[in-house]
Amino acid sequence: MSEHIHSQRDGGLLTLRMQRPDKKNALTRAMYAAMADRLDEAERDSSVRVVLLTGGEDCFTSGNDVADFIQAPPTGLNSEVFQFMRALFDFSKPVIAAVAGPAVGIGTTLLLHCDLVYVSRDAQLKMPFVNLGLCPEYGSSLILPRLLGHVRAAELLLLGQAFTGEQAAAWGIANQALDDGAATLARAREMAQRFLDLAPSAIVDSKRLMRAPGREELRKVIEEEGALFGQRLRSPEAIEALTAFMQRRKPDFSKFA
Ligand code: COA
Figure 1: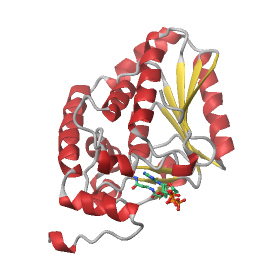
Figure 2: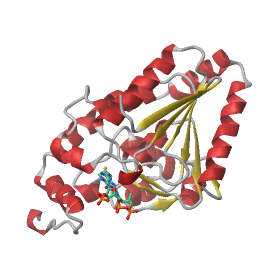
Figure 3: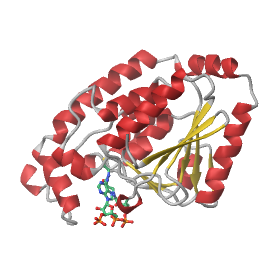
């Protein structure tokens, strides 16, 4: 259990909300574990028909808790973050994301595994893995170049360039950019209601068909990325970058040339 993950049921809609505002909803091991548990329960519970993932009206998430990365890095495929991403990857019912404010690291990566994504126009999305001495995760090294072409994906993944909600919608990472966090959440809820009005098994069958092509290839890439990410977390480059974040200074990679 984590007090930083709030779950709410409204009929067939389960809303999971990341709520750790003092750390910009940075995700701890306990938060991943709680989200994995809620998703696994929702998978088994036929009365849950759609899941909405959000961080509220101001902030989606600043990504993995950096202190956790230093003190308790994920160790393999059974770690809490993998349990959460596996539960999301295998979730058979629709998942909608409502994104406002920062969506950093896994906060952007996880959107690639949702079915509908709504963003506030000025949301700040970013995958600064290389900037932290790390590498892409959970299939983004496969999905993004296919979706965006290599050169644009390289700006996002190799340079860690930030982009707005408006750009995310223009590039097909999100369905629509809305004026602010409140409008984004309202739109996501409206679309959840549309799912609730449709035939549940037909949605599940259709999602499975849409996700099936290339799924095993994607699973392999996720494992390969995960193994490399784990190694990179212990690398001197990553330790320098993560320590620099905690010390509020720029990392110095000059000694690794
Ligand atoms: N892990 C741990 N703590 C984090 C965090 C993270 N991922 N992101 C933010 N925080 C903490 C800050 O250290 C700060 O804590 P403090 O008040 O105790 O000093 C607090 O949250 C507020 O963050 P701050 O950076 O001051 O807010 P901001 O509005 O200026 O910037 C972000 C917000 C999200 C843009 C910025 O915090 C950021 O870039 N974080 C991302 C960290 C990251 O690289 N995550 C990816 C990991 S792969």
